[in-house]
Image (cartoon, rainbow, N blue to C red):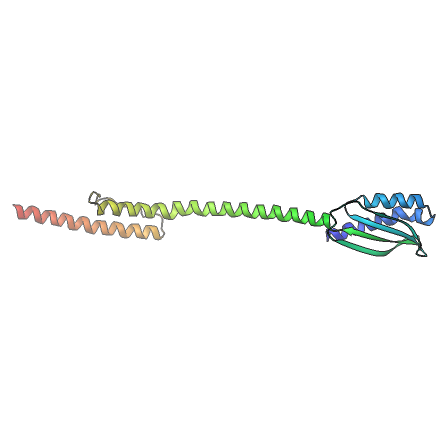
Length: 193
């Protein structure tokens, strides 16, 4: 849409610049205007003719980056309601493609940065909310399995998620094991007496 509006604006500019020069058949002025028009990034070539189709001037840009062209043929030049001439003009899409390419690169970079930030956030939340509590439960079980664990140790159960359910069940198992150990200790003590 921007390319189309740029082309329309350029055509309007060419019409207003060429109107008097074509009407008066001022070949030098037509040539100068044509050369100045092709010095822009948008226009690559132009050929101007009078109302009978006789070529008055033409110019071609020196840009090497012409990828694709959009050509408008026989664009009329009016002075009032009278047709005074026509021109063929070629517009380069290279500049617009360059802008679009830059926008795609910037958008891709922004998406990648957002993706990295999201992944970092997920990693940190996973560390804090899942891995750390599970590691805590695992460490407590390891200490008990190695024989040096405190049977009175309890894990926090305030988070209200699956980890707190696991911690609550761990605490219940520890209460049962502590109760069994106390009973065994009492029975052993009675047997020794």
